[in-house]
Image (cartoon, rainbow, N blue to C red; front, side, top):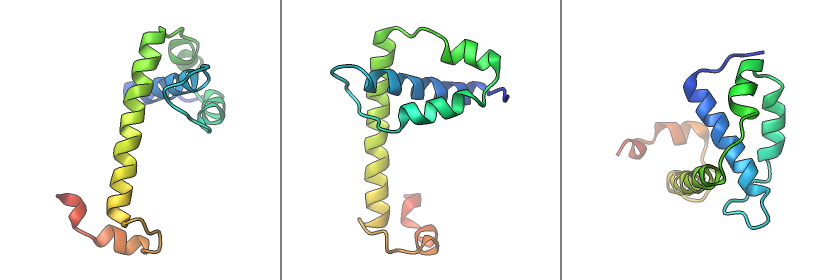
Length: 104
């Protein structure tokens, strides 16, 4: 079992919030893989991390806030990928990495 640092625990908490929100009747975010990923990760973290993060009851306002924030970051990521790849996955990885426009 692995102990996570504070940054990793925050990411795990955000994933948990995404899963909780996605499983609501009227979710603000849809995450088809979140539950699967959370279930796989939970067996690899320490008992302490499970107690502190995974078994912790989260207020619904916090899960909604984290899910909305995650949705915004998802949007930023999609925009970045579209901008960098120009909508085409035909570019080679080396072409992608050699482009300097991503530094602007």
